[in-house]
Structure formats: structure tokens, C-alpha cells
Image (tube, rainbow, N blue to C red; front, side, top):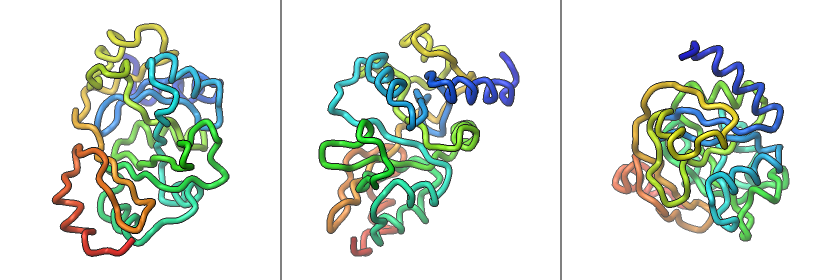
Length: 204
């Protein structure tokens, strides 16, 4: 296995060229592309056999990037950002006009997360923009927690796979913070009780 820093350098080059990279995160292995490359984003849908109406989440490296990609951060969203990010919590928010249409849902939302893992953060900082943060699996199959599991599912359809060892194995919790109150859409590494305990009394 190449050194991790040299793998990250190569992956940054691939992403800048519009390629696809699989990488370890604090949850599972992700399949990434630059958010600015519409062609690469479309390839992710094809590689994963993912239904086109299921919008892809984005990983960002900072709260400033979240502020840039969304129209509004509600008090409950701010509470969750402060309490759980970086970490395994994905927030569904209203997308700003800086988010390409091919990344938003029909309702104009986008799912954002700051990962608690140095590799995706280095990739985001390396290319200067958010990256797609979907799991590196075929839709409906188990999410991979090792580079070898990525290879077994996606094979040579990915341009580069960073082998960063094993991942935590539990996917992120997804919370919709677009409405008057927040809604937990998927329970993952962060429990509903944790969210309710910290942010349950915060008005959206």
C-alpha cells in the first residue's frame, strides 16, 4: 500500500480531472467526485446503479462551506452543527443557488456533512470544493468498511481507491432541518436520543 499522503495527492489529482475516488471516512467508505463536475456526478449514479431521483450527499470541510451551500441555518441546525460536527450526522438543508441543480432534490434541498476523518477533509481542501459523500457500494448492497470491499463491489469502475484501513462501519444519521421542527430521517451512528437531549428544545 502506498503511503497515505501520496494516495491523497493522487486522489486530489484524479478529482480535479473529473474522476471518481473511493476513500475512508469516519463511517463507511465513500465514493466521491468534485461537486463542480456534473459528468463525474452522473458517473456515480451509473456506477452505483442509484436511482437518479435520489440526490447525492456532499461532504464539506468547514462550517463556512455549509454556510456557502445553504440558504439558511436554522437554530436547530446550528445546534446540531455545534454539537455533532465534524462527525456522523448529515443535515438536509435548503440548497443555495451556488449548488448545481444536478445535486439538489426536486424540493431544492441538499444533504451536508463535515466528516470526522482526515482523509476526506484533505481531499476537500485539496480540490477547494465539496465532494460527493455517498457510500462506495452498489445501491442496496452493504456499505463497505474496507478498500477491499469497495473493490469487490465496484471493481475498476472507480478511478482510484484510497486504502486507509477499516472504517467505523456505522453510517451517518440523517436529519431534515428544513422545516419548523427537525425530523430524523435515518438513525445511524448518532442516536435519536443524543439529538433530542442536546437540541430537542431548540426551535427551528
